Image (cartoon, rainbow, N blue to C red; front, side, top):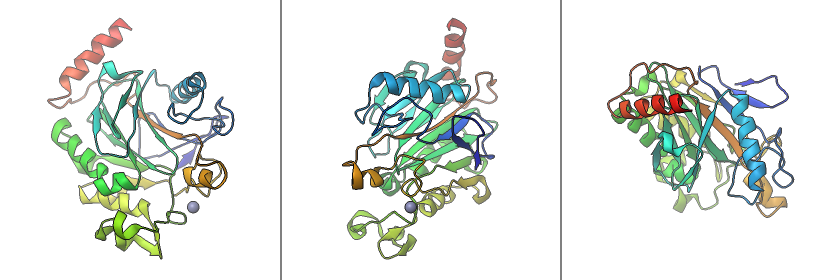
Length: 276
Ligand SMILES: [Zn+2]
């Protein structure tokens, strides 16, 4: 994981050769309790500030457009189309995109963003994964969707797990009823779970190569550079901003080998960019 040396702090991974960023909470325009790079419209922040914050993050990556979703801790996957640009479709927790120059955004404060890139396949994905998403295996479902509908072999995927709640802070008092039995093996001390390792296990279980996975290993609750819902519950009734994780294909990417379901979308993008 590499800290970009700019006034606008964010992290990148050497595994991903497309524009992407794991953003910290600094560098934006929002006031407390959303100070300052809050990227969520769903937490009570002023919409204009969120809009500017999103533009800043996207601009920092050289991306022109952005697609976000209203995340609900479920397992539905949005297959992005040009019509989704600038919208916030409700009820999705993963986004798959073949659109050049378009970032897909995951908003999280302790949950994970898992960014995926398939070299040679002109497709990226971003997953919002909290413990409910882990239980539903949204990671495995997204990898399978990429494989079945975009012809992406899982072994070719690169995966990055964002700063998120670490094993130091992921306490689950009710784990016996909330987490399936297989996850209990990831209890590192009484009631504390390693969800970084759980996500890694879920990626490997569907065929992602272990050396193609990077975990940020930064706990958002411990590290004050990130928004943290758990930290905010102790001081601000849980009201806080959302960190952003963005990945997108560069604007200039040629369509290399679109899968059967992506050809129409690629054509649409070409005509949309011509008209832009
Ligand atoms: Zn921690």
